[in-house]
Image 1 (cartoon, protein in one colour):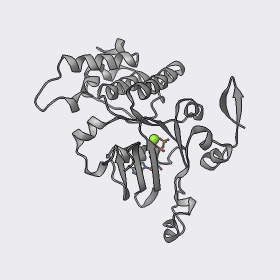
Image 2: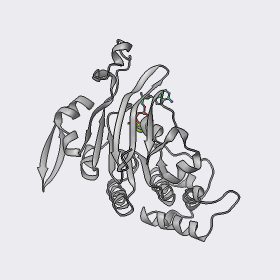
Image 3: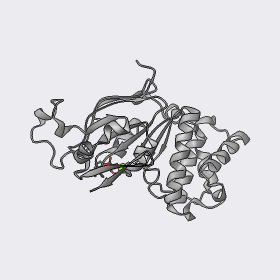
Length: 278
Ligand SMILES: Nc1ncnc2c1ncn2[C@@H]1O[C@H](COP(=O)(O)OP(=O)(O)OP(=O)(O)O)[C@@H](O)[C@H]1O
Ligand SMILES: [Mg+2]
């Protein structure tokens, strides 16, 4: 197995209530890369992240993270390897924000032990990194959506994983915090050689912050006309991946049209490509 590859998906398919949502997804994501999954609502980004994290089992296909078959990994090993910030966060218990971040240390604390000073330090450092130290003693149930998002990202950082899966990390964040968080994630990926797989909705963020982009399309609501035909790998209607590779290669107007059905153009501003809907 190629040791430069962090995440490998081989022919992953999944249906919900016999509707095909992910069809034959194969990916090879480089270790240490920042990878963005981009695509319209309902195309299967969250589902794919859950499969990579072992929370969902695909109907067929395999996923390997750092060479490990995720279907064979235990929860603790998984939590040491992968930090996951889900799309929606809920907590009805009034733990403080710091307590929540400390739970990220659980995979490193042996059974029946309490978090030690080192765990507390890691948790505080993580809160500092996302600019959320001021929230430490606030009940998690009484902070805003964006503040919760920062706390959950800090929790994943406190976990010190080699792989970080972020499902719409910027969705609740203000204009400044969106950039701050994405910059911080890029820095961590570079400095600590963490592989990041995240979903984003803003293609310009994807252009700015990704080493690789996986552009996905939504499969037809009514399913395939011909299931046999669907199994033929060249049938694009039953496959989600429009293109995968460098942002510039993947995010062409043609590919964006194929994924979203809208016309866009790129403009060059101060040596940066900006995508605009027409
Ligand atoms: N538990 C479930 N049961 C049935 N259908 C589901 C379930 N979870 C998701 N789906 C459906 O599967 C499809 C893919 O959902 P998913 O959440 O992976 O999309 P997404 O790309 O993350 O979308 P978004 O950008 O809106 O977050 C959607 O059509 C959704 O309605
Ligand atoms: Mg989603």
